Amino acid sequence: MAVFNLESGFMLIVELVLLAVKVFTFVNSLLWSTDSYKAANKLTKPAWAIILGLGLVVQLVMPGGPISLLNLVFTVAAFVYLADVRPALASLTRR
Image 1 (cartoon, helix red, strand yellow):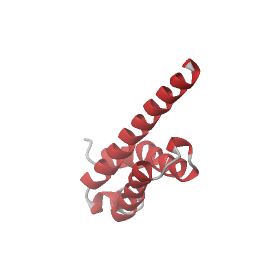
Image 2 (image 1 turned 45 degrees about the vertical axis):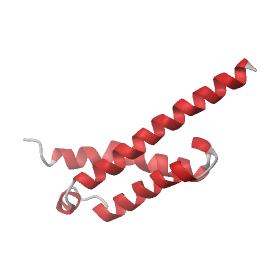
Image 3 (image 1 turned 180 degrees about the vertical axis):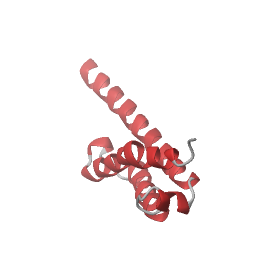
């Protein structure tokens, strides 16, 4: 019985961390201007907002937790935004 409690507690922590990542990426994608995305030669602002917003909705609405396939796809998209798009946008404002 203790193993199942440990597992469910771990999955809850994973879900909350992924939810925080998706909320952060969605909000961050809305803070940059449309011209910034064009200057960084990345996907457009509406496209990233839709992708990350759908990921956030899937995280909140769909059952299956962080292991469901659709949730994994949007989690990868959020991490791609963090690893590729956000640094490119931030480099435009650095001096």
